[in-house]
Image (cartoon, rainbow, N blue to C red; front, side, top):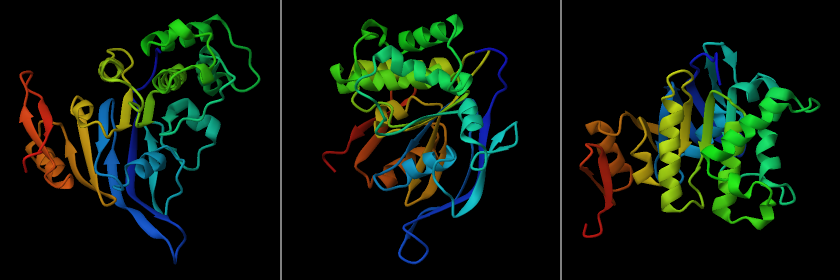
Length: 270
Protein backbone atom coordinates (compact mmCIF):
# COMPACT_ATOMS: atom_id res chain seq x y z
CA UNK A 1 0.00 0.00 0.00
CA UNK A 2 2.58 2.53 -1.03
CA UNK A 3 2.60 5.64 -3.12
CA UNK A 4 -1.09 6.52 -2.68
CA UNK A 5 -2.43 10.03 -2.56
CA UNK A 6 -4.67 10.91 0.34
CA UNK A 7 -8.14 10.53 -1.23
CA UNK A 8 -11.43 12.05 -0.28
CA UNK A 9 -14.96 12.27 -1.64
CA UNK A 10 -16.67 15.60 -2.17
CA UNK A 11 -20.45 15.30 -2.40
CA UNK A 12 -22.49 18.36 -3.27
CA UNK A 13 -26.27 18.77 -2.85
CA UNK A 14 -27.06 15.06 -3.05
CA UNK A 15 -30.71 14.27 -3.56
CA UNK A 16 -32.25 10.84 -3.98
CA UNK A 17 -35.86 9.99 -4.73
CA UNK A 18 -37.01 6.38 -4.56
CA UNK A 19 -40.06 4.97 -6.30
CA UNK A 20 -40.44 7.28 -9.28
CA UNK A 21 -41.16 10.98 -9.79
CA UNK A 22 -44.88 10.80 -8.86
CA UNK A 23 -45.39 7.95 -6.41
CA UNK A 24 -41.91 8.05 -4.92
CA UNK A 25 -40.47 9.69 -1.84
CA UNK A 26 -37.41 11.80 -1.22
CA UNK A 27 -34.88 10.05 1.02
CA UNK A 28 -31.89 12.42 0.72
CA UNK A 29 -32.42 16.16 0.85
CA UNK A 30 -29.49 18.15 -0.49
CA UNK A 31 -26.59 16.63 1.46
CA UNK A 32 -23.16 18.20 1.04
CA UNK A 33 -20.12 16.70 2.73
CA UNK A 34 -16.40 16.11 2.29
CA UNK A 35 -14.66 12.97 3.51
CA UNK A 36 -10.97 12.81 4.28
CA UNK A 37 -8.40 10.31 5.58
CA UNK A 38 -9.57 9.13 8.96
CA UNK A 39 -12.46 7.07 10.30
CA UNK A 40 -15.92 8.60 9.96
CA UNK A 41 -19.02 6.95 11.43
CA UNK A 42 -22.43 7.65 9.93
CA UNK A 43 -25.14 7.29 12.59
CA UNK A 44 -28.83 7.96 13.06
CA UNK A 45 -32.15 6.23 13.67
CA UNK A 46 -33.71 3.65 11.37
CA UNK A 47 -34.89 5.22 8.14
CA UNK A 48 -32.58 8.23 8.41
CA UNK A 49 -31.08 7.55 4.96
CA UNK A 50 -27.66 6.31 6.09
CA UNK A 51 -27.39 3.32 3.76
CA UNK A 52 -28.83 5.31 0.86
CA UNK A 53 -26.22 8.02 1.39
CA UNK A 54 -23.42 5.45 1.51
CA UNK A 55 -24.62 3.84 -1.73
CA UNK A 56 -24.85 7.27 -3.34
CA UNK A 57 -21.27 8.05 -2.32
CA UNK A 58 -20.15 4.70 -3.76
CA UNK A 59 -21.81 5.46 -7.09
CA UNK A 60 -24.31 2.61 -6.63
CA UNK A 61 -27.44 4.71 -5.98
CA UNK A 62 -28.75 6.93 -8.80
CA UNK A 63 -29.09 10.57 -7.84
CA UNK A 64 -32.02 12.89 -8.44
CA UNK A 65 -29.58 15.76 -8.22
CA UNK A 66 -26.06 16.52 -7.07
CA UNK A 67 -22.63 15.11 -7.75
CA UNK A 68 -19.96 13.01 -6.06
CA UNK A 69 -16.33 13.55 -7.02
CA UNK A 70 -13.24 11.68 -5.92
CA UNK A 71 -10.49 14.14 -5.10
CA UNK A 72 -7.68 14.87 -5.89
CA UNK A 73 -8.36 12.93 -9.11
CA UNK A 74 -11.46 14.89 -10.09
CA UNK A 75 -13.23 11.62 -10.92
CA UNK A 76 -17.03 11.77 -11.14
CA UNK A 77 -17.99 8.68 -9.16
CA UNK A 78 -21.32 8.08 -10.89
CA UNK A 79 -20.05 8.36 -14.45
CA UNK A 80 -16.78 6.48 -13.95
CA UNK A 81 -16.56 2.90 -15.32
CA UNK A 82 -17.02 0.34 -12.52
CA UNK A 83 -13.49 -1.04 -13.03
CA UNK A 84 -11.99 2.43 -12.57
CA UNK A 85 -14.19 3.18 -9.58
CA UNK A 86 -13.24 -0.13 -7.94
CA UNK A 87 -9.57 0.86 -7.84
CA UNK A 88 -10.42 3.86 -5.70
CA UNK A 89 -13.44 2.73 -3.67
CA UNK A 90 -14.09 -0.52 -1.82
CA UNK A 91 -17.68 -1.25 -0.84
CA UNK A 92 -19.17 -3.59 1.75
CA UNK A 93 -22.94 -4.02 1.57
CA UNK A 94 -25.12 -4.48 4.63
CA UNK A 95 -25.99 -7.98 3.39
CA UNK A 96 -22.76 -9.08 1.75
CA UNK A 97 -22.99 -11.18 -1.42
CA UNK A 98 -21.25 -14.52 -0.97
CA UNK A 99 -21.06 -17.92 -2.61
CA UNK A 100 -21.14 -20.72 -0.10
CA UNK A 101 -18.95 -23.02 -2.23
CA UNK A 102 -15.94 -20.70 -2.21
CA UNK A 103 -13.34 -21.07 0.51
CA UNK A 104 -12.57 -18.12 2.77
CA UNK A 105 -9.26 -17.52 0.99
CA UNK A 106 -10.85 -17.71 -2.46
CA UNK A 107 -13.43 -15.15 -1.38
CA UNK A 108 -10.83 -12.73 -0.05
CA UNK A 109 -8.75 -13.18 -3.22
CA UNK A 110 -11.69 -11.83 -5.24
CA UNK A 111 -10.75 -8.44 -3.86
CA UNK A 112 -7.67 -8.47 -6.07
CA UNK A 113 -9.83 -8.34 -9.23
CA UNK A 114 -10.07 -4.57 -8.82
CA UNK A 115 -6.31 -4.39 -9.37
CA UNK A 116 -5.76 -7.31 -11.75
CA UNK A 117 -8.86 -7.46 -13.91
CA UNK A 118 -10.79 -10.66 -14.57
CA UNK A 119 -8.25 -12.41 -16.78
CA UNK A 120 -4.93 -11.69 -15.08
CA UNK A 121 -3.13 -14.41 -13.12
CA UNK A 122 -2.48 -13.61 -9.44
CA UNK A 123 1.17 -13.45 -8.46
CA UNK A 124 3.03 -13.85 -5.18
CA UNK A 125 2.31 -10.21 -4.32
CA UNK A 126 -1.43 -10.81 -4.63
CA UNK A 127 -1.21 -13.86 -2.38
CA UNK A 128 0.70 -11.83 0.22
CA UNK A 129 -1.92 -9.06 0.14
CA UNK A 130 -4.70 -11.62 0.52
CA UNK A 131 -3.01 -13.30 3.49
CA UNK A 132 -2.32 -9.97 5.18
CA UNK A 133 -5.96 -8.93 4.83
CA UNK A 134 -7.01 -12.21 6.45
CA UNK A 135 -4.58 -11.72 9.30
CA UNK A 136 -5.83 -8.20 9.94
CA UNK A 137 -9.41 -9.42 10.21
CA UNK A 138 -8.58 -12.57 12.16
CA UNK A 139 -9.86 -15.12 9.67
CA UNK A 140 -6.70 -16.79 8.38
CA UNK A 141 -7.08 -19.80 10.70
CA UNK A 142 -10.00 -21.10 8.61
CA UNK A 143 -8.78 -19.98 5.22
CA UNK A 144 -9.56 -23.35 3.61
CA UNK A 145 -13.10 -23.71 4.98
CA UNK A 146 -16.03 -23.00 2.69
CA UNK A 147 -18.28 -20.08 3.46
CA UNK A 148 -21.32 -22.23 4.16
CA UNK A 149 -19.31 -23.86 6.96
CA UNK A 150 -18.72 -20.54 8.74
CA UNK A 151 -20.81 -18.67 11.28
CA UNK A 152 -22.30 -15.29 10.43
CA UNK A 153 -19.52 -13.48 12.29
CA UNK A 154 -16.83 -15.52 10.57
CA UNK A 155 -18.31 -14.80 7.15
CA UNK A 156 -18.46 -11.11 7.98
CA UNK A 157 -14.75 -11.08 8.78
CA UNK A 158 -14.06 -12.80 5.44
CA UNK A 159 -16.02 -10.12 3.59
CA UNK A 160 -14.13 -7.41 5.44
CA UNK A 161 -10.87 -9.06 4.44
CA UNK A 162 -12.04 -9.06 0.82
CA UNK A 163 -12.55 -5.29 1.07
CA UNK A 164 -9.04 -4.81 2.50
CA UNK A 165 -7.55 -6.99 -0.24
CA UNK A 166 -8.62 -4.42 -2.83
CA UNK A 167 -6.07 -1.99 -1.33
CA UNK A 168 -8.52 0.79 -2.18
CA UNK A 169 -7.73 4.04 -0.37
CA UNK A 170 -11.43 4.70 0.32
CA UNK A 171 -13.51 2.17 2.26
CA UNK A 172 -17.31 2.52 2.38
CA UNK A 173 -18.74 -0.03 4.81
CA UNK A 174 -22.42 -0.54 5.60
CA UNK A 175 -22.83 -2.08 9.06
CA UNK A 176 -19.41 -3.80 9.16
CA UNK A 177 -20.00 -4.99 12.76
CA UNK A 178 -23.03 -7.11 11.77
CA UNK A 179 -22.86 -10.60 13.37
CA UNK A 180 -19.65 -9.74 15.25
CA UNK A 181 -19.40 -10.37 18.98
CA UNK A 182 -18.06 -7.74 21.37
CA UNK A 183 -14.36 -8.77 21.22
CA UNK A 184 -14.37 -8.69 17.42
CA UNK A 185 -16.24 -5.38 17.36
CA UNK A 186 -13.48 -3.92 19.52
CA UNK A 187 -10.82 -5.49 17.29
CA UNK A 188 -12.50 -3.98 14.24
CA UNK A 189 -12.58 -0.51 15.80
CA UNK A 190 -8.85 -0.81 16.51
CA UNK A 191 -8.25 -1.93 12.92
CA UNK A 192 -10.12 1.09 11.57
CA UNK A 193 -7.95 3.37 13.68
CA UNK A 194 -4.82 1.62 12.43
CA UNK A 195 -5.81 1.89 8.78
CA UNK A 196 -7.07 5.46 9.09
CA UNK A 197 -3.90 6.71 10.73
CA UNK A 198 -1.24 4.78 8.86
CA UNK A 199 1.61 7.28 8.60
CA UNK A 200 2.42 6.35 5.00
CA UNK A 201 -0.92 5.46 3.41
CA UNK A 202 -3.90 6.53 5.53
CA UNK A 203 -7.30 5.31 4.39
CA UNK A 204 -10.53 7.27 4.38
CA UNK A 205 -13.05 4.97 6.08
CA UNK A 206 -16.77 5.73 6.19
CA UNK A 207 -18.92 3.28 8.14
CA UNK A 208 -22.65 3.13 8.72
CA UNK A 209 -23.04 1.94 12.31
CA UNK A 210 -25.93 1.20 14.65
CA UNK A 211 -23.51 0.28 17.44
CA UNK A 212 -23.10 3.68 19.08
CA UNK A 213 -20.35 2.59 21.52
CA UNK A 214 -18.25 1.60 18.49
CA UNK A 215 -19.24 4.68 16.49
CA UNK A 216 -18.07 6.95 19.31
CA UNK A 217 -14.54 5.61 18.80
CA UNK A 218 -14.39 7.16 15.31
CA UNK A 219 -12.58 10.39 14.50
CA UNK A 220 -15.74 12.01 13.16
CA UNK A 221 -19.49 11.50 13.39
CA UNK A 222 -22.07 12.33 10.75
CA UNK A 223 -25.47 12.41 12.45
CA UNK A 224 -28.44 11.89 10.12
CA UNK A 225 -32.17 12.25 10.55
CA UNK A 226 -34.89 12.27 7.92
CA UNK A 227 -32.49 12.26 4.99
CA UNK A 228 -30.56 15.28 6.23
CA UNK A 229 -27.30 15.83 8.10
CA UNK A 230 -28.03 17.08 11.59
CA UNK A 231 -24.44 17.37 12.80
CA UNK A 232 -20.88 16.76 11.65
CA UNK A 233 -17.82 16.75 13.89
CA UNK A 234 -15.74 14.83 16.42
CA UNK A 235 -17.58 12.71 19.01
CA UNK A 236 -16.60 15.10 21.78
CA UNK A 237 -18.22 18.10 20.10
CA UNK A 238 -21.16 19.44 22.14
CA UNK A 239 -23.35 20.07 19.08
CA UNK A 240 -22.74 16.55 17.79
CA UNK A 241 -23.65 15.05 21.16
CA UNK A 242 -26.79 17.15 21.42
CA UNK A 243 -27.85 16.06 17.94
CA UNK A 244 -27.28 12.42 18.88
CA UNK A 245 -29.53 12.67 21.91
CA UNK A 246 -32.21 14.46 19.90
CA UNK A 247 -32.30 12.12 16.87
CA UNK A 248 -32.63 9.15 19.21
CA UNK A 249 -35.44 10.96 21.01
CA UNK A 250 -33.75 11.08 24.39
CA UNK A 251 -33.34 7.30 24.56
CA UNK A 252 -29.59 7.62 25.14
CA UNK A 253 -27.33 9.55 27.47
CA UNK A 254 -23.74 10.58 26.81
CA UNK A 255 -21.09 10.98 29.49
CA UNK A 256 -17.35 11.41 29.49
CA UNK A 257 -15.39 8.22 30.02
CA UNK A 258 -12.03 7.82 31.81
CA UNK A 259 -10.23 8.15 28.48
CA UNK A 260 -11.94 11.47 27.79
CA UNK A 261 -14.13 10.06 25.01
CA UNK A 262 -17.92 10.14 25.31
CA UNK A 263 -19.69 6.97 26.33
CA UNK A 264 -23.30 6.09 25.67
CA UNK A 265 -25.88 4.53 27.98
CA UNK A 266 -29.58 3.85 27.54
CA UNK A 267 -31.90 6.25 29.35
CA UNK A 268 -33.98 3.43 30.83
CA UNK A 269 -35.29 5.57 33.67
CA UNK A 270 -36.35 8.42 31.36
